[in-house]
Length: 369
Image (cartoon, rainbow, N blue to C red; front, side, top):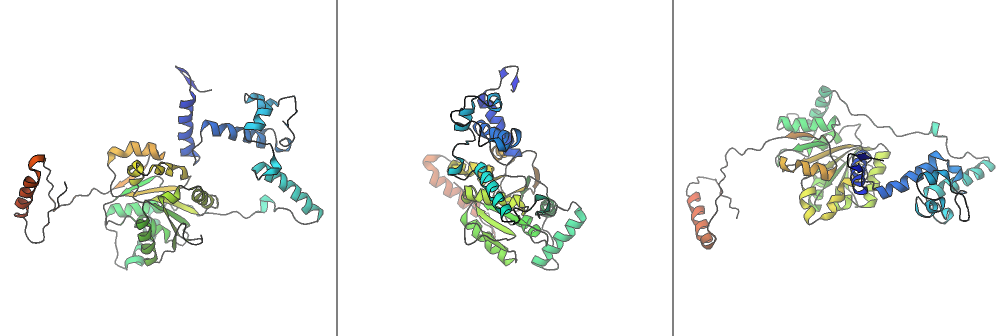
């Protein structure tokens, strides 16, 4: 029981804390209702023992199991409603698979064949840990940059270099805020070119951006695909459009990569749109459901600090690292004026003409109304 000076927590408050913490630490959003099922399933699998699952609590039993009583319900209710055990043989569930596996093992033994391989000898996937030696990482990233653009290539700014190195070194919850044209994409492209690199997933908000990313990666010689087009295969970069990324099959694909230790990072391109576009694309709020224990990188050219707290809450973030290049256009003058609505056209035309009279050569005037 959780309580404070006001008494025990309400279900609403408990749910809010549970969903926030599970999203942040487990990679999926668990409600109190879901926890009830999960807790009973854990109890059956690990506490009371799986051997008793199929026999206990069948209809007609008079006695309630003490494990169920401790969870404040009868055994009959537990079997009927929570982490259901009834009709195991009628459908594939984790419990029924375990039962079928036991029967299969017996047949294999009778045939004098080897059953499932012993877990102690099973070959498990391994993943190269990020290199935390900054000098070594800097050398590798510079070599990758020169492979991409030529032997004299250099990073445009110190912020761009820092973004690439931070990504390659596995800095988590990394925000990279660079103006348009300052090379944000190199943040994940250069690390993906390394010989030991696994898969990088890039989630982008628009189909057009996904197409552009596909062509740019191919031009740089980086093997990549757009998720949902053709057969899935092992590549360095998988580009996914946001609406596709929140589908159940895609989330499972991402989690499978993670469990196979084949996922280096998830990159959210134009990440500000995940929050801004929720007004007319409400499903974008589900994007946080795919967040798992892997490096998360957020790229944008537009991210005012005023939206930080709202963004952290919406995406279940904590203590993000920021790399920001302040964008000053040295040869640009800004001017804002409020004009009388009745004479708007005339007044606007006069201001435009007066401004144009001051321009020389190739100078331009951009007007936003």
